[in-house]
Structures are given as structure tokens and as C-alpha cells.
Image 1 (cartoon, rainbow, N blue to C red):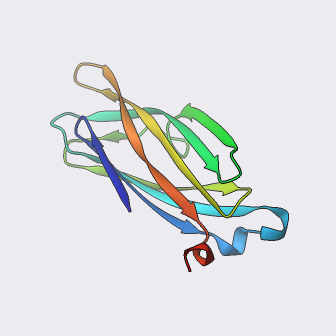
Image 2 (cartoon, rainbow, N blue to C red):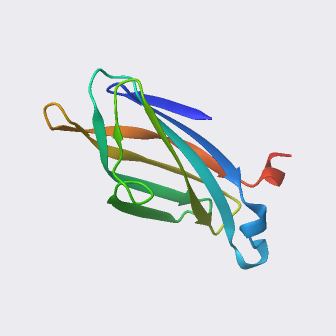
Length: 128
């Protein structure tokens, strides 16, 4: 698990290789990731947007950007957390992801970015 804290918002990421949804012969490697967003600040926040950079070990980079996460823009109260699971496919058996969330502090509508720490996507047999 990797973790980062930006302006009182803690992001933790876990990854799982999805063997049953992968097809190495066709350069298709599927990974799931679980992200937990903890609001350590004194103010309610809302996640508005996300931006991802996805790296394959063959040198390719993809950028994904859009509103919210998994179709919603969650409000997270002080001391609360929000977790979700999503997925990513790679053309290689190793890669990584990183990015940021655009967050709004609801009390004064201040916008800021929260770093999503870089995490590795590695097929388990590569670790042997």
C-alpha cells in the first residue's frame, strides 16, 4: 500500500492483479486498485475531478481525466473517509499510475489538488 497526505487529505492505494480478466497472449493485463480518501482536515470537502497518468513498461503513457470517481463527486466530512475500487488495463505485465484529485473545501469553496501517490501495477510472477 502506498500513502500520501496533501492539505489534510490522505490517499491510500492498494492494487490487485486480475488474472481471470487478463490475456497475456494478447497483451492485455488487467489490474484493480482500491483507493481510500481520508479527510483529516477540519472542513467538509468534495472531490470534483481526477486526472491519471498511466505508464506501461514499454514506454507508453496514457492520460485519463474526468469528473468525480466511479461516476460520483463524493462529499467527505471531517474525520470521515470514502473508498472505491476501479481498474486499469496495461499492454505489459508491469507499469504504474499516479495523478491527482481536484478537491473543493465546501466552507469557502477553495479549490486545491491532492496528490495520488505513484503506485506499481505488477503481475505477481514478475516478483519471483
